[in-house]
Image (cartoon, rainbow, N blue to C red; front, side, top):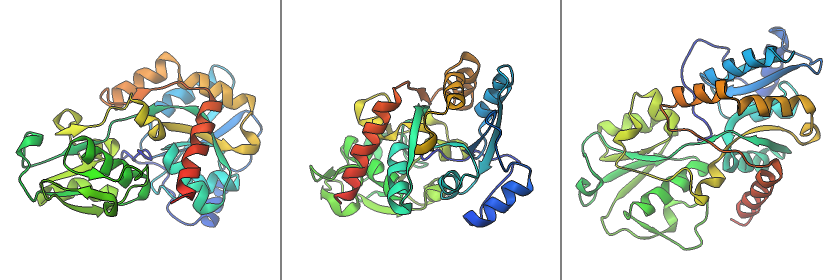
Length: 294
């Protein structure tokens, strides 16, 4: 998250309001839970969760991935009790969502972190970007801040020292190459490569557009401490965070079969990270406080 970005397939797509979502879920026979049947909200095509569902059956646990193509819905569905878990977002996105919607959704485990890259259809190397280059980047706060830091790490711009995770173009203090930055919808960033000199594109969006991650002019390091806020998580409502069935799912996600699928479908770009839930919650709290201080 990238909030994680959808990869297309024919699936249950829920793009209406939370109320309509509840009706759709119950209408599809997904309403209610017997404690051994866990509904997990995922974003777009998530074959690793299909593998996990097969592994879960061996332990007497039924896992049903519920697919969303709208990032605003999985947390609403989780808060409403229409699903049991979700796995589509990084910690920055979760902090922003909890704050905006006054929800209490909490991480129960980490999944993966992926790099954020700067791509171009016109230039082969970072040094080839001309003076006054046009660069697009995601416009949602949780990804725009990270994208601006990518540009800073690439030495294209400088940001205020206290710009933080939610930096905006207004936080730029130096722009030696006179880069022209245009925020756009994250899903549209690949299309802008037709006209722009470069674009910061989320890993999942790049995959959808057929862009090879190896062609990035620059990308951040997903294993660095600075990437921790962008660690994707499995999340639950706070009142169910200690559900023992959820812990079974956490162990299954770390299994060889699931991780092989993660590596295959991400072309090796996704890095599985295991951190105790208490550390994830501490990081979420830190991010939430930074968001409140903006």
